[in-house]
Image (spheres, rainbow, N blue to C red):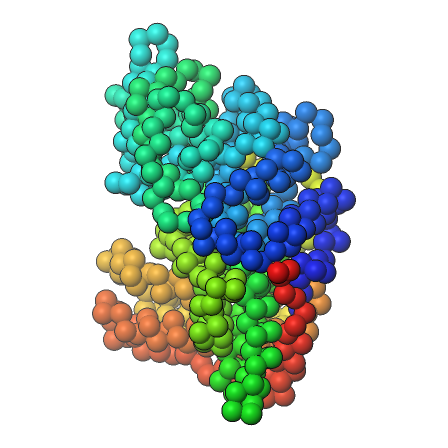
Length: 577
């Protein structure tokens, strides 16, 4: 199982210029060293040095400029494979560095989706000059409610508008060369049924009518509260109107939230290196810490969950890059990459904390740098609740509908150096219940010789029986507290689907796959137990939920082999001091 090691990075799948950028970024952080990295975090230093580096090396310009706006530069494109890998690298060194990159991606989303060529040229020029971008969607009073906004454009009587209102929790809002702002036109209707009045427009954070209020977090990153006070908006500053503006907001989040799982993966990989190296080199009570059974069990579970995160993410990239009007499966796997992978990362962080104990709080450790971020990642770009509600829209078509013959061939591995242009023309954010899927059972069948894969299939059968023989009532279908647990079971099936697909592609051995599914069988059983305790369930439904539970299949020799592989990574990487 590949584990990212900056001293020996495996970047062979990428072209020369992409590898150069990745290696230059690694050299930037390793060259400055761990003491510098930690000091910058402790002192909440705005990352001028990193931004100067990315400007000099044209990192954001190369990786985030679509070919259509590249002015002939063959290295510029919007390629989700290398965007995901760069998210992982930045997450490895610190979530603040990942954040300035992530928010720039969000800020560019509405712009690259627009037909406004003037704004796109301006954005490409700013990127080339090293600028960062911001995404002005959230508001203090409305949070993630995209239907409601108090940012208002009022006609000025001369063919333009004046913008008034506030935005809150806007990353990069202090320095963004361009901020994409979501609002409404005064007097036009907005809401779930009528979206005529929505609008997206761009502003400059340096303009005198842009009032920067404060950083709402105590961190290196700047998460701004700002107001627009009679900010003049010209027709050429408007990039979307009506339902197109609403769809641009949703589709931008679809693009941006995908990177959250990869940032989490990077952070967890760094903490794994720190944790396993520390524990394996420490002796207590005449016993190496990694020989204590409870510590060994925690590290094995951490390793297995980390491997599952990586396998799922690698395959999810292929679905994102192969998305089309006729193949929107990526929307389910995108939501899972955001919410499930980030939650798994938080779980691994917690498991490793129990292995390293007080060492994790010391001021020479990377661990504290990522700790707060790991709590925050599942709650960015729409909470877990929002993304689970989205995932649930696919439950019936994924679990019950016959496989679409046109999707029988799973997408190929996509690391080709081309633009992923469909992500900027996803179309209306509707019709999700009709999205068709492949035969996930066929994927599982190829691995059904493994006992824990078979057990998970039994659990899925019992889960389907619950939904069919004791279906949820209309009232229960409105009970999100109940549905979130139903969604946890459902998304575990899809999570396993892509893990198995990627395990086939990489030739992962039975031992690791079987260990991953040992953990997953336990997770589904835990979700089923939680489900039985929901007060809105009937007695018959509770019995059906109880029938989902299974005891995983254990194998001491197989576990020992997986542990040997995991333990062998001890001492293979430490960040340059």
